[in-house]
Structure formats: C-alpha cells, structure tokens
Length: 484
Figure 1 (cartoon, rainbow, N blue to C red):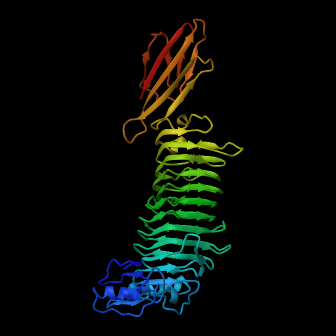
Figure 2: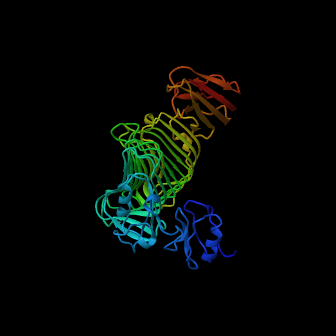
Figure 3: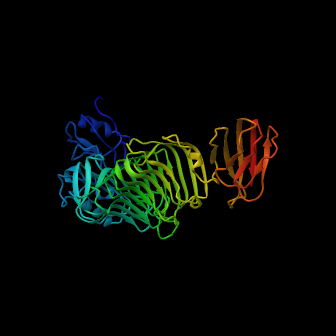
C-alpha cells in the first residue's frame, strides 16, 4: 500500500493519522481489529474510537474530535462558547470557557488555541492545565481590564503555557501571570507584553513558589518584567526588552527566604531604569552567561539604596557585555559576591561608572577573577581588600616604585586577612630623597613584617600604612611585606 502511514498503535487506544485511501486502510486495519467502519473519503482523518477505526470530522493534526474523557479542548477565533470545544470544528471562542470545562471536574487538561487576539477577563485560574498557542506572536491572550490575568495558587504543582503571548490592554495595570504558593509551573516561548504603564507586572512570584521554569520567554515593555519574592526559580534564554525594571527581587521587609533566582543565557536590552534590581534581602542570585547592552540607567543594582538590606549571595559570571547608561554595576549590600569572567562595555557618548561600591563594609566577602574594564580601569583594586582576587596597585610619583598588594581571608567567619605586598624599586641614586610608599589598604595594627629585602637595604621603616625608603639607599631592590 502506498501514500499513507500506519499509526503506531493500530489495535487499540486513540492513535490517529491522515490516509489517502481510507477504504483500503479500513480493510488493512480490519486484520488487527474486529470492528472496523467504512465509508471514508480520500484525505480524511481516521480515529480509533475504542471499538474500531472510524472517519474523523476534521482534518486537523489532532485527529478527528475528542471526547470529554480526553481532557483536550480547542479555542478558535471562529469558535463559539456554546460549542463543546472538542475539535477545531466545534471550538470554543474564549480560553475562559475552555478552562471552565476542566475546572468543573477538577481534572488536568490541554487546550489548543488558534491564531488571533483573544480578549479575556481577569481571573483565569485552573489547576495543572497546559495551554498551547499557534506561536509566540500568533496567539495573544489580552486582559480586558485591570487585575490579574492568570493565577496559579494554593500549592498547585504543574501547569504550562507554550507558544503564545499574554498582554495588557492599553493603559491597563495588574499582573499577567501570578504564581503564589505554586510549584513546577513552566512557560515555553511565552511573551509578556505591556506598554510601560506604571503598575504593569509581567510575572509575579511569591509565597514559597518554587521550581518554576521560564524558557525562551520574552518580557517586553512592562513596568516590571518579572517580580520575584520567592526562591528558587529559573529563567533560561530570556529576552528582557524596554521594561522600566526588567527583573526585580528581594524582600524589603527583611524576610530572607523571599528572594532568589537563577538567570542563564538571557539578554537585557532597551531603555529603562534597571535591568536587575535586587532591592532587599534574599538567599542567592546566580546571573550567568547573560548580555546587558542597552539604555537602562543602571544595569545591575544589588542591595537597597540605604545599604541596610541585600542578598546573602550574589554571583555574576561569564557575561561578555555589562553596560548601564549611568552605572553598570552598583553594590550597596551583599554578604558575599562572586564575580568571574565579566567584560564591561559601553556604547554611549557619556562613559558610565563601571563598578560602584558606596560602602565596602557592606560587601565584606567576595571573589573576583577576570573582570575586564572597557576604560582601562584596574577593577581588582576597586573591591574590598578582604576579597579573594583583590589586587591593590602601588605607584609613586617618581616612577621608581611599583608593586601590588594581594589579600587572602583567614580564620573562617571573621574579617581577618593575610596581606602580601611586593614592591619593585628601580634605579635609585644615593642622593634620591626618601620615598614614602602608602599601601592601598591599611595593614592591621600588629603582626606585619618585611619578609623580603633582596638588596639587604638597611633603615627601611614600616608602619601600619606606609613603608619609607630613606635617602642614601641606591640601586634596585625587591621588597616583600607580609602581615595578618
């Protein structure tokens, strides 16, 4: 037999397919099933109905029509809410009507939506329903007024949105997706769309919501693209564009568990106030392989502006472009930071501040490695001296002395650090005036020594903050100073 394909389960179940010579196929399937109907036409769908193979009523890839036990519904701009919603030919007109069919018997289900804009009232809610659109810009679910378009709550586990957009009506406010005490909710290729009206939130998560995934989603022109007041959830391949604040998190009331997120492989572009604003306490934030390249005033802000609250850990790694119009990275408060392989970038006429730490005491622990300035700045010297990877660069006005200071934290849980200073002194003359070298960060008041003096110079004077080379010492030397 040519020009058709056999289903994978020809003896039972609900396998479906398209066949070009249905009467021949009926005869073939009769070998596997004792009850086979006839009368199909070329190009029609065959569907196993539990007792035999029968012609379907439409040509969709979903195959024939479903029944209520299948928990599959269809929504179309050509539909009518009075229809049963069991096939494209009998589709419902609104998502709300389709979801109500599942709510009535408390069952999971799948809803297929055709192309077009579907205006829905706020208050959509259903447990563990999967809604699949015709494409991220083909199917749009638009909220008709102010409020919350979709809510998942009460300990629900599951639920999924795919290949569609959730959108605000012009000037409307509220939330497009609200996950509160929800778990394992997933969004694949979903766009959250607004017009930058104050009060428009694309996604809001709180009340212990966790293990939710947002994959290849877009957050466009919202006041806040995503607001996270819980931990731990995941953004993978996100695209944040032209939001006032792209991602906001942290709990300003001081509850540490209400903050945390993993963001990977995402792009932040377009005008706004912040790309990432962690504005309170939180557990941990990991930002990895992301791109910040647009016109937001501040690319990343960590901690509240007054420096009283911030996350327990903040990690920024493998970012090849970090650019904010005014400030690229500002650290107000965090217990520990980890920075590795980050390149600052800017394309504006006004050069931004790349790294700002208003009060180093508010970010006492950290590690920095591979930070590259776009302005030739020595970024390793701008972090607190207690950080691993800190390098203090030493130069004197004569150009005869250069060196570095490095530190390493000791005594776990304290601020005590080991410090090592290496100085290169070049071509001093016997009549050169004394040179006073001021260390980038003061040693503690005790336990410091000159442990290296290659030229065996006598008369070197060491204090807590300086090293003095007196007049009369000539030539070159390598000097090491260590302390605790």
